[in-house]
Image (cartoon, rainbow over all chains, first blue to last red; front, side, top):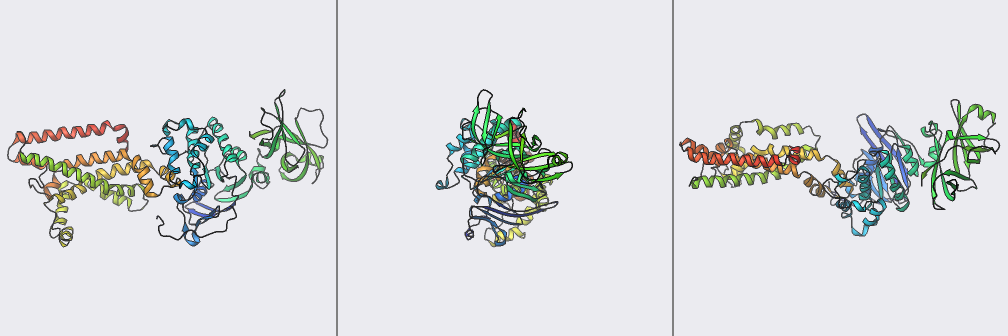
Length: 374
Length: 226
């Protein structure tokens, strides 16, 4: 049980990626996944409830032991059932953020934070307590007991507690699911800062498309215990064979860089990487050069052969037709602007009227742009 | 002097018996309660039922079987004799063993409830924060189950003090060795010595009242685990 006297874990080739294969059989449910995830950034495990997201995350943590499994993280082997090797949860360099924070009720916030930190060797402490406190804005809560915290505060303490163990992999199980909208808005910016300031790969379980679009770099779509798709976020959102693109609310996520702000009209101007194109949207000023993400819904993009000079739309961008997919009476087009991709949904009638073909240059008339990460 | 030397000896012996039994029961009862709280084994219900048996059996039945098994021809008696320990019937050690069986459910049940109330959450959190199973038992389970331990200790102590049937069967009535307060009261009544009996009996009533008062005063935190 404690693994005394066991041989050290077998060496594996380190390519910096996270490789996982889990087979879990329960009566009425089977999780069977094979994943190859980037060793940095946020990978979202996305799916409906009951799709196996949390089961999968618990296998990563070692909280559940799959009947068959293989897991390699940052060049370390954590499980290989073929060699009979299983590293128990308390020996894995993970941080786990529970859905309901799961703080120790008998310990103050400070003691909760120190619990994990004290249990790792001093030489491995890369994330200082002060840094985590500041990152999550919880320094004023240190002496409180968990019962005296709001849901959002509890969740931030839970994240800090996981961070100060300096994990090699941060596992987050729907950290926002138990919070109301207001608390969600309170915690989300901290999650984004985490992403920007710490170089720890994150596995983020969620069933909320908005959170995923805002936080993730890589997207894994789980359905009934199987991997339905796995790939970089932006490309995966555009894939026409997946429920995202065929959805009524299909959207594209685009990167931008702040280049100007029109104070008179309160309009923010973004430069799209890899092109001259610029997007304008109503928003308060942000520092120039700041990288942001915006999303544009497919139904908010219409197409024209010529540039409409006298119209109320702010954003008219020249785009190239890349591909399309028929969805009943409508067509879903993938357009390219520089190295960014955009979705547009138009009727099949308009598609034929405009004589759309691959490589064609068109004007994308964008009705609405929303900022994801300020 | 309302209390004779025999009475005082009986009181001291009773307190000693109850303290030792409670201490041993907390040590023995904790792993049993932990197992009962965590296991999915089919043995859970049978074991739980065996632990609860002393709640419903007449103490004389427990005493009878213990007397038989600890006696010179019993299984346990033969074992202790072969180890050169003699037999435990009519000794203080025998009384402690009997009390452990007699009070077992009063320790295991509150502890099991306390452990079940903790659930898996805090243990899983501890594991993801690098605490091995022993570490998390002492740093998380013990402090969180403290109300359950207090309840178990009070109930075990009080219940052991009140035992009569088991003591009479396996301990007999040897002053200073196996003569506890409840037996001494019986002696006084048998010899028509009602005044002496009143002093001891009244003391027991007062003691029991104080114990229960202490228990119910901590109700908000402790009774939840009962």
